[in-house]
Amino acid sequence: MKKKILAVLLAGMMAFSMTACGSGGENADNNKNTADEGTAAGDEANDSKADDSENKEEGSSDEGGEATPASDMNIAMITDSGDITDQSFNQTTYETSKAWAEKNNIPFTYYKPDSDSDEARNASVDQAVAGGANVLMMPGYMFAASVVAKAEMYPDVKFVALDVGAGDLLEKGVGEGYDYNPDNYDVKEYYHSDNVYCCTYQEELSGYMAGYAAVKLGYKHLGFLGGMSVPAVTRFGYGYLQGADAAAKELGIEGEVEAEYVCGGQFYGDADITAAMDTWYGTKGVEVVFACGGGIFTSAVEAAVKADGKVIGVDSDQSPIIDQSKEGLTVTSAMKGLATTVDTVLTEIQAGNWSNYAGKIDNLGLVSENPEENFVQLPISTTQWGEGFSEDDYRTLVKAMFNGEVKVSNDITALPETSIKVNDYGSIK
Figure (cartoon, rainbow, N blue to C red):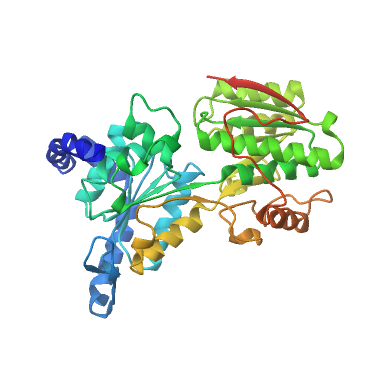
């Protein structure tokens, strides 16, 4: 099989990688420094675990065979292209994993690759395993390369790849010649799935909720600022447009609602992107921008403060960080249930139920008509509810979406057809 061929090619590199990770060189020192806080927590957990080891019950058998004591978990989280203060995937994964580990007296640390590259992320996987980690938390599609390259090398390590889908794995596994249609491939031919759990999120659903809420709350000139034009960002954006369009139709104001749409070409804000947002808020009259893509929200926030505009956050409830710039700046956030996923999977691993996850690529979305129980949602406590869209209205919307009365397309091959005017500017960079 193709994955076996890949393993043979990479196996010769393994010894060198492990030696380099343990060499005490500059990169190793830098990574260790970024992990100090997590390592301290792990040391405390190890001391506690040593005292209680005789009282630990053994978990049930993993898919790999023999039963493994639940207390044998050793967790490492690796950042993608950002860091643990990005107010997005990295930070949520770090904080949730760390809190879970501390609560359960499990060793935990994190690693920040020394550059934004597949090679650097792969090196961090090597370093984490060399440091004793047997559960790797990897947030973001960029880790597809690490899953393809490293999972078969470390069959006793559990890889938890958050927001990594079949298309991401195939792009790295197939390489040149991939036609970007996952249905044409058996993805398991291209990576070692036995010790890997992947999940993606139905971003179009929370994007829809955000766009629907914005128009119902009275905003008529909307903006969408994406990071890079990757599938997850596009699903957020296209869902946002669909939700705004649906709300405008319900209110009978399709001709009054307009949306600006652009991607920055990167996952961080800078002067060029802020200038574009200044034009949106200051000249075009945009009232609220859905900033979707890691740290790119900083440019939307900077421009919104100047023009008395508003911002919609993404992935997690971003109001605590966005509202530091100005109180009440955040209308809502289109969230993924990343924390719920981390808690659930780690708890199941501890209970010996890894076989329920290994080999799966889940697409997580609505599992209940109750918003709080879903993997995609708006934050109830911080959304700026109003007469046009109350918490009760939100609950009614979620129930209708869960029951299939409201349908949201996940097609990202072209901008969704809408009755509202949409101005697509492509990418700033």
